[in-house]
Image 1 (tube, rainbow, N blue to C red):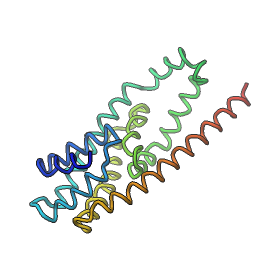
Image 2 (cartoon, one colour; image 1 turned 60 degrees about the horizontal axis):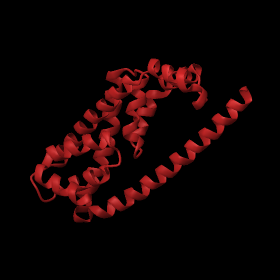
Image 3 (cartoon, rainbow, N blue to C red; image 1 turned 120 degrees about the vertical axis):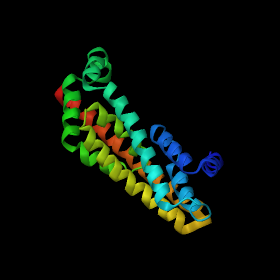
Image 4 (cartoon, rainbow, N blue to C red; image 1 turned 45 degrees about the vertical axis):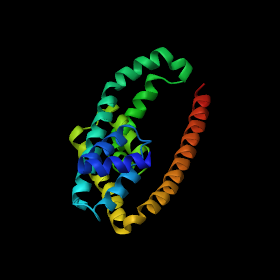
Length: 203
């Protein structure tokens, strides 16, 4: 996949960066680390500029986030409650649980959206619960832009700084991603254990 990404970017330049980052936001397994660091490297041997790559990448991030936000709007609380009404016994969920989760995101959602834009995998997926909670759209776009700009700028600048050694940065980003995934898995397991115990106490 890495070879295909670099060849696509070599051929299409800024548009390639924009399109790949937009797709990466919708399909997180596509590595933004490769796109951004190689984009930074491209500024050392082509007419592309660092600012141009950053702008193209950030625009792609925003459009991708808007797509996932729209999916979240479709899967709103009302629809989730209908799912819980039908499958709640199996999932061990109630309408009250859904409302609590929605209230939590209403309270902490803005900080969550901003910080999660810096975490692999969930940096894209966080847009879905933002839409589900009907988070203020202009605020969502603002925080997504800020978080994406930080992430994109850092990787593009690093890629430009290391030049043709950009692949070494991808290696270190893979380590960072694996650590993040491990922490997410541990956190998910901990939440599941807490939730099971909480439900047992209520029975």
